[in-house]
Image 1 (cartoon, rainbow, N blue to C red):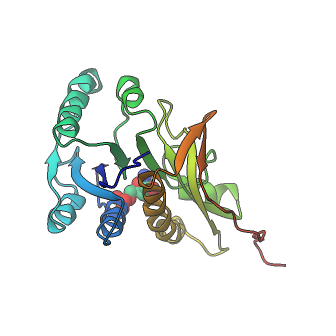
Image 2: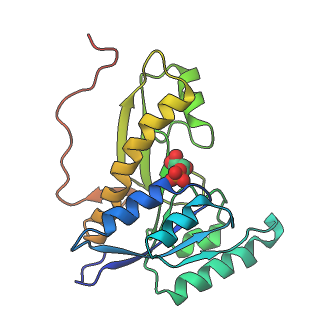
Length: 220
Ligand code: GRF
């Protein structure tokens, strides 16, 4: 996608603690990173992630959300800030507002999200409790391009984690979160290196290889 020597200019949209944002910031701080985090926007003024971004020296902005009827104004304000910063890619990282079709279409294939499940399973909220209730043996996380329908879009990377018999939603969430912090920076790096394209609504990664071993849980 990038294809030039200058780093891809990235904005991260958050609503909360910002641990995924931090993982992206840390990875982009490595020398020679193909991506640069130029802006962090929160819809909540008290989001803990804002302080973390500030501590990393990244410009931050707060765009308070409004009633659904005024969503267009909310999104116009975000768009103005993205445009002013010359942003080329948006990373949603725990951003808890639904974005309208017009905004999503304007950023088609230039906006990615991390979701705490192996999509297309467990779209929406409370994914860890729902995975436990369903009795699945593997759970995980997905990075995907954003489409208007919530938690859909071409999948760039997934990580599977085992579900353990003693898991609670919190213990499972913690295991998944560790995996999130691995795959989100990876996906961003691949995009910034120009290795990701969308073909027939599937993401294709140049030079990607898949693990060769099946994962079995419980172990035989
Ligand atoms: C993560 O679990 C992410 O998958 C989901 O929201 C959570 C955000 O956590 N979309 P954090 O703010 O990145 O710590």
